[in-house]
Length: 111
Image 1 (cartoon, rainbow, N blue to C red):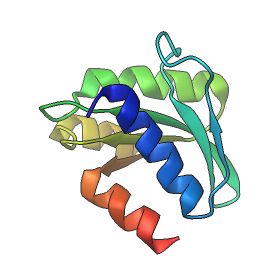
Image 2 (tube, helix red, strand yellow):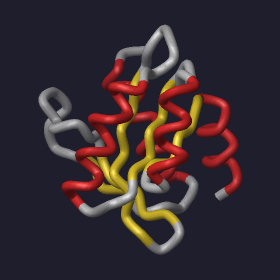
Image 3 (tube, rainbow, N blue to C red):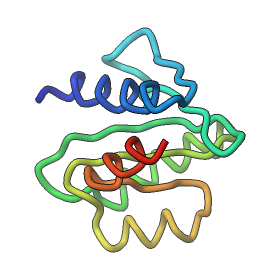
């Protein structure tokens, strides 16, 4: 699956589960986010990564900076999970929710 198809799968999965979703118009050079989803009464920036290995702390740091700049929480979805330092940073920030592929499936089915 291409990275763009993965982004589409995420946004459409949330939409089909009843969540409000806003997609960005451009898929390349998106500024570090791939769309927005309305969860728990708030809009969240979405970042999706289809990587062969866990997402690193540096990638989470970049997304956290974006979320802080936009003053919004973030939802980071990655096919192969997150490194331990990345999970620790996201947890400590209290601004980013991490979802691996399995958690995404559970979230979409739970809606």
